[in-house]
Image (cartoon, rainbow over all chains, first blue to last red; front, side, top):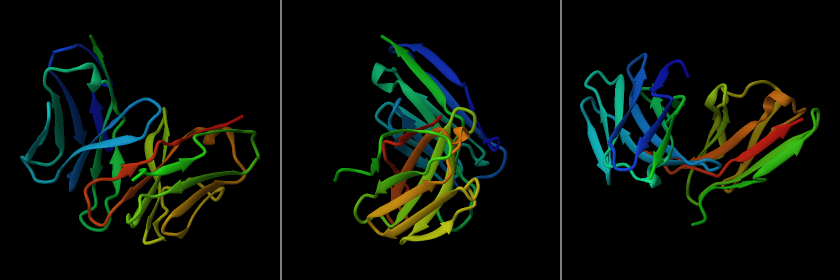
Length: 113
Length: 113
């Protein structure tokens, strides 16, 4: 979706290195979601951010949402081969109603042992 | 729980044939989403059901696509007649109440020749 841009499109890192994936929205969002997808499988939910300035962590993955609620970053510390996959951000642009998620184009991550 | 179940996992068909994709949601989840994923367009929402009722079908590409949810434990997405441009991975995802998480099935990989 052009409403949501992810960068980089792909990333190759050495095991143990840190990395950051960015997600930028063209308008204010009401919920920002991060999912991970392995090839041939469905998406797995990682985190949801809702408030400006919010930050959440799960194991070695940290996600932040900026104060204006238009940009999010996903940071992986000390990457491992198990982190490899496609990371998708999704945004809910609805102020009410159901969780209608518009997904970004994804970032393909490879971690070299 | 077995998670969201989709069938078939792979489908190869010829242009003009009818295709039916099936989804069994996680028990107790009252929201169901059908998505389509392609290289060109990424992951797109096709239709959303709540309590078995279609709420938002604005993402359904054209009249050749139809979706039903006759009960809380079963949904179908039908394409009739199918065309090569319908080739994609189709995902079903379900959600419980106002939970922040959508649970995705493994997807059906459709190839229309």
